[in-house]
Image (tube, rainbow, N blue to C red; front, side, top):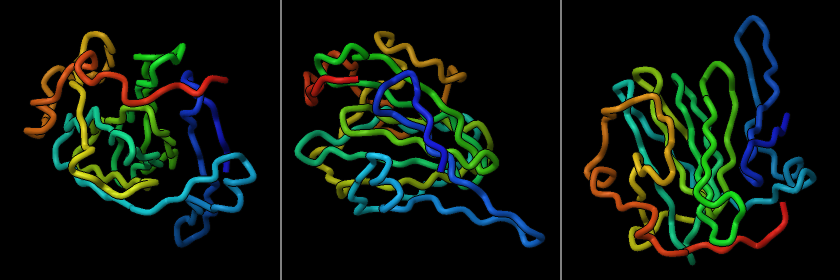
Length: 187
């Protein structure tokens, strides 16, 4: 497994090694023992799988507030997405900054989005499937959204009129969520 840093400390790209032959390929997307050796000891408790029919479907920017905050490990199993993480840890030198990584079925990359970050993605192809692991169970009471087009964040999604859910159309600006996460220091 190749582990690459991004412009935001704690958000990392994981690229599993693919083993191919005449049948196709195989890859190990998570190995708890190997990841713990790399400092990524995460207790996954839920796997999610989404399908988006239209190109330009945008899901996000989402987070679960404490005490039900979630780490996420995201991969695209069919099609391609621009996957985005935004640092919302108060006191962080990267507060409000974002990073976007293209994840596709072809490149096999995964993005680790830790607690304290908003998460969202936009589909770059039709019929896109995204799968992700979560370190806590879904909680309706803690399910929160920040506007995808919040100018204080300025994510370049590459779309101006995305397909959005009702929830994402009603999301609030970053300035309205208070400070649900604190930065613990260190880089």
